Length: 557
Image (tube, rainbow, N blue to C red; front, side):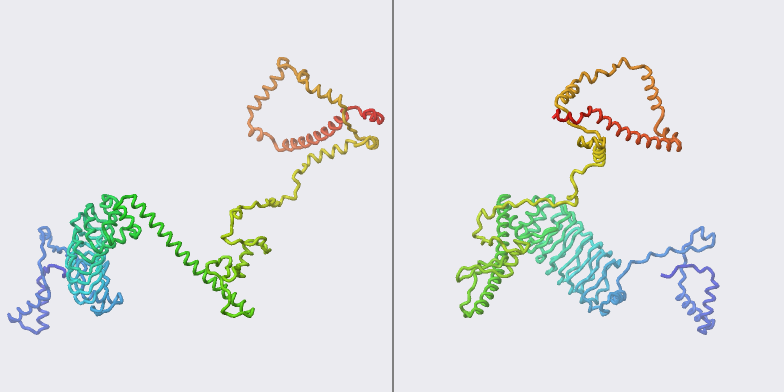
């Protein structure tokens, strides 16, 4: 609509009338003036705007509020442009599918020329009422989910409709679907269905086989009777409804009630499940257990039969290979093809390549089988020590595990190293003893080394008796009362000084020059200790006993 405004100055109108009169060449007669004023009123629509008292005083005009923009509407021109954009036919009747989802549509309209549609997408719009679909008589699939639809209606013209999706709407009752004779799939999840009466209309849909009622508000256990009355119900989804918790043995009950049910909620209903459910309905848990064991035995038998059939085919193929090889050998020996030997197909072992001849019962084996046995039983390539027995000749003793020789552990990288190596200290002491002790009197006389001999038995007894007496060991020790007092005072002073100084303070107080002097003194001390150790060792050897003269060795012996 054009903007509404007030023209306050009359001079503007007069100027406009004069200009129009000059253009038309009309004079100043009353009739001519009337015609000019009529043209001015047609071209310029002057509407007096409501003016408040304050505005009147100020002499200002007030603009009227602009009206709200209307919602998006389907038009024929928009549909043609949309088909061109989607690379569809610009001729409406040639299109069999039309995508109008997410367009902000509030009403279905302008579809009269689209008579050939078979699939119509109107998902995620603002549609409140289903209407204006009378010309879509060939429609098979209609998608109206995620809208604002509150009632199912106006679908009588869609006699070929097979799939209807009205999920995520505001529907409170299922109705007006009995007019669709070939409707097979109904998706009506996320709505406001509550009781048995709200879904009772499903019984009137004879061909309906797929029903999705998930995430509604169904809480009446009697809804099972509705599903039991549907003759062709094969797929049912009730997930997200509180009625599931109110039905005892929900899955078994629905399986027994709905004879044609093949898929319930999120998983299929297998023939085994149906047989066990029907056994449970007739005989309780014990009958269900027996039926389940029967099905398990049937499945095992079926698997074993299939495996045996496959083995039979494989054995027959292996027997044909043996027969061809025997025929070639028989012809090479000058025999007739009709008298060629054959093998028994039941005796063929395809793994080892062995078979039994029908004429003489001899066991034959293929070259591949021999190579396989050679690789399997002896990896080094030598011949087998014992022939392989047939399966029917194997005894219990053959199955016993024979003891094998224990292999010694592999020698490590440190195997060549000596286990008990002598240390450097021991070698040093041995060298000192070798240099200081003589091994014979002749060596003693020539080198001046100490000769150490064995002690007599009576001297060993005297030494052991003196060591064994514990009283003599503590005889020379002073008693506690005989300790001098200055020693106690000295130790106490040392302890006080030790407590008063920390390790950090001591380290900080030692200067560099003193540290060098202390290191030098420590090295000198070590050298002194080493020399004293050698001297003590030599003196100890000399003090062991007086060295007897050479003529005294004979007396000792």
